[in-house]
Length: 121
Image (cartoon, rainbow, N blue to C red; front, side, top):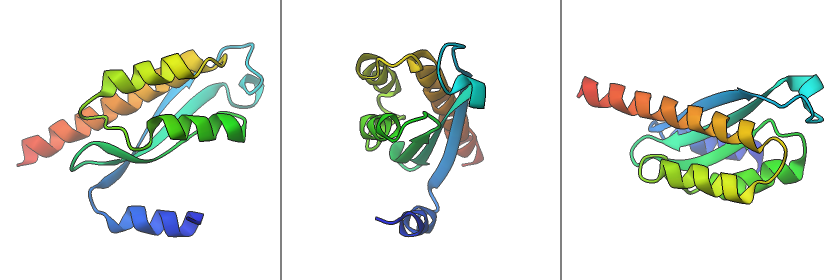
């Protein structure tokens, strides 16, 4: 699916929200001089916690695609700790610690939004 079509599909569902998390990159990582922080961005369906799209500021296409494959389709509502463990086990790059920290921050943001929605009901 092309980028514009994908965004339109995401926006057509009012339950999909964008959450992001950031973490400091290690000094030895190539992208540190350019970014200093690594970002994880998730489009999450608030109705069930499923990750419908994901992106990250990892430097290479392969690393970004690999991360997407690890997290898209997973649920931050039902198995957030399992999701973080999966990334820890499967992503062995030098940015792995920052990647999982940023992912945890996304999960925290999702939980806060979910709690806020529950309180509104």
